[in-house]
Length: 65
Image 1 (cartoon, helix red, strand yellow):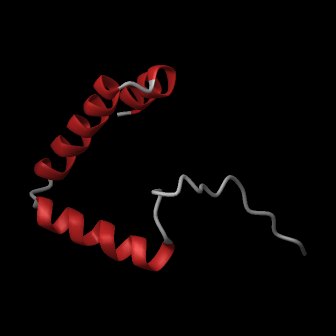
Image 2 (image 1 turned 180 degrees about the horizontal axis):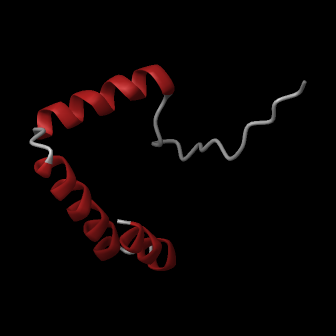
């Protein structure tokens, strides 16, 4: 998986996104989850924590003591 993500970070092309997706697809299928379960979980997490659609990423957390 990390190899495919590394290649995507270098290229950012559709083919590399497809490779990352193929690895994720194999992972959830190997654990016998369904696409419906995967999408349900994605939606739940997005409602609770937001998603990545707006390209907003948390880069670090600073704890002031």
